[in-house]
Picture 1 (cartoon, rainbow, N blue to C red):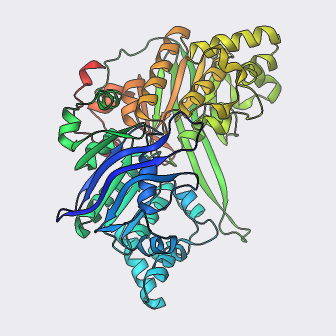
Picture 2 (picture 1 turned 45 degrees about the vertical axis):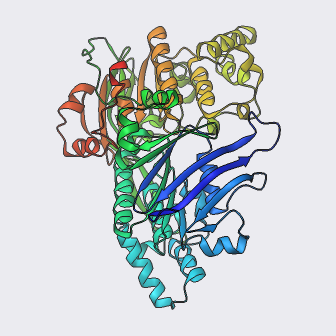
Picture 3 (picture 1 turned 90 degrees about the vertical axis):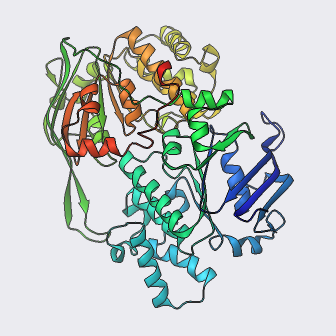
Length: 542
């Protein structure tokens, strides 16, 4: 091994159970992890990125096994270690940040206790020293009020704070290698920027080698020293970041980069069409208990007197950090939750004052596509039954409703054969297409899309966005598009409304908001976009 090489993967192959679409999760991989360098491993879901990372940690699922090759850490062969020997390495020499901290953190234990377990396993320092080190680490990852946070449970803190806590846990013993598996997926841009800066700063301070797994090329452009591109379990391209970002050689890498939404906004013309929906001084407040056993409550203002309009055929983007109130606005409009003030005027009728019966005729004209399509699809119904369900409820005959369902499934690119299958038989991108078909089944005048592409691979994301644009042009509906991804907003939206702490702080044409932002918060959002200064070599093709 070379002097600055921390870990080497040589000819690594990981077999899959028989009956799948391929024989190996990972096949013939060669990679080197170097001290004080960030290697970004990119590829679509199922490309083998996470399986490769898990093999380094000795955390492969039971049905998967290494069939060939070696993983060497400082001349020590890892793939022959016993579970006990692996336990000695995990956390101390090699640590991992998982994609979804809520799944990785124990909901029954407070944050401080979970970090302390790492110290108890690998050190003999006393309780006072452990507490001091935990507090110092929580401060190092820029978490507010560490004294309070060590007593908090995972569900009591935000997604960004949970991710920082995972970073603190991974780095508290100053490992030589850090593996970060999609640590910024589904986080808003400001939280993303904070996590990326944190990892980069800590990596430089501690000379750590980092394996950063992601499908987001904006993130790659922001943080990578080297890039390895994976497809179907194989390594198709590896080089310095600047080389791959500016001049990718493999056709798959070119395809991935071509799918990244361009930050340059298309020029748009201000719409003069009639107003279809008007949100007027909308308010929503939640009551929250001060403690688990406490009877006292505090108020959280989720939406604070916001105003905006949607014209016929127009797409309005609602952007902002997690917790800014974006999804609450959407749920108020479709009456999934009640409002506490203001009006929602659809074709001059105030939806907030309608009872359930009166609302029925209007509900079909405002439909919603949810962020998590799997969670919003009934697993007991076939796709055809789900798409047809809405029209049937609204009085359409079954034969006609099912025929319409088949036509819509064809429109979203799934084909008529999809009608007889169940949601679990489809990929994430396909399930999102099903959600779109179901929402369109009632011929809505307004489609509300709540983070519809946030967790999708960049190529699938591009396909879904293109599909939405084509269908919108064909059916001429209006759209409220909720997103934290400003690259997506730049390409999809005619207007942008920026939300912060329940308020709209800026609204205007997409071009004006991106090129001449007026509010300081808008400026900070734009400055936080990962890879903002990277010029996509295929941008001219959009």
